Length: 492
Image (cartoon, rainbow, N blue to C red; front, top):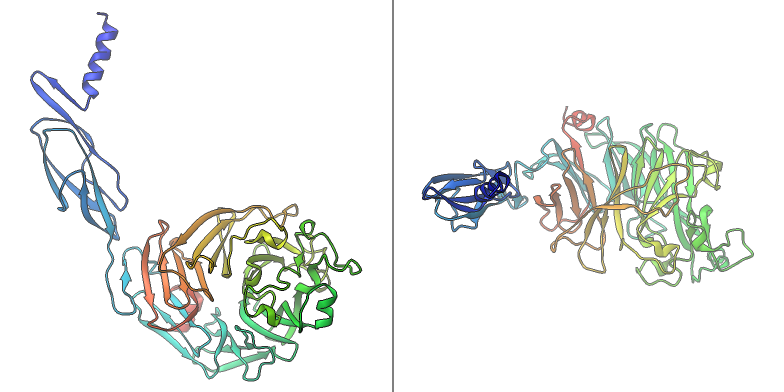
């Protein structure tokens, strides 16, 4: 037998799970990797009779539960080597019950670097809370919220409130934008409410101090009928107004009606093949639709969330009754915003990008979103990611979805596919009307479930915090870091 063959036999004997050498037996002990912790022991081959003590080591936020492969629930396990073994420590989240508002808390895994701004849905209150449910600061108002309110860098609040005499009364109507001091005093007010328009749902604070407001705008029944919309009354479409609170001037407007396409009346300039005009809005998408009670009443788009991407100068718009998110170029002049050219993307006010429902421009398309709220944008390694609350009414369970968006350049198609990188749901997570999601500094995701309260999940999609509103309804939850100017100015 040659030396190479002998060496091969020796290797085989040494690496076998068990072997006998000079009347000694050896066995392999394997420690399998486990989520949530590790051990102080390395896998290897050990002589029969060896006494091993293995300790399970939970990671922060986890606790040891049991061993898999041997019967033991002790964090320390003693093994007398007499056979080969494959074992695995099992860990679980170290969840504690804090109080009735916080029934689920993993103290080591939540993002404790800030506070949660809790906005009661259409009510007269909002407040800052910590992860123990303590109210750090509270504001009470004389008017009901028209949904959104935010904290500005100077510590004041900018909020949308309901007028007492609205002419347009769909759910989510507001009408008055107010700036409120941290002491609770109204220091500025701007009204968008008459028989033809009303501010609704959401506002967005721009870096220059201006305010973007969503506005419902009336389209006369006859004009709607001319484009093929079979309505017994007027219809209401979306407009975005930018207001300078120093001068009270409207300095920029985007009107969705300027960017519609229809295939019913070839005598009009907005006539076209809808599948070939994906940068346009199919105004007939909800024609004769019964998808929501507001649609037959004329509320055919129902935008409900607005976000701004500063370094791209893009507006992100959640359009609930289209089951879509639209991206619009804000760099345009006022004239360009009503056209199809100009701006950084040279598309004027047409849609730069859209996501969520290809049925809006393709009869054979599919809908990923089924009513959607609170679009938010995260930038990771120069990639833009869209986080959205998908109410998902058809399945009766809501989804938190995040998409890696394509590169934004002048050649971008409005319908380029986006990569789904997060899809979280839970059998207990569902609300058909409102909701929200926001990425936190430590990578966790804050979720607002409108009829319950708030959730926080980590990047393993594990629930690390729940806040129970005890019957209260919430529009949104917003996270502000403790070292942010917003919080510093409020608390000081």
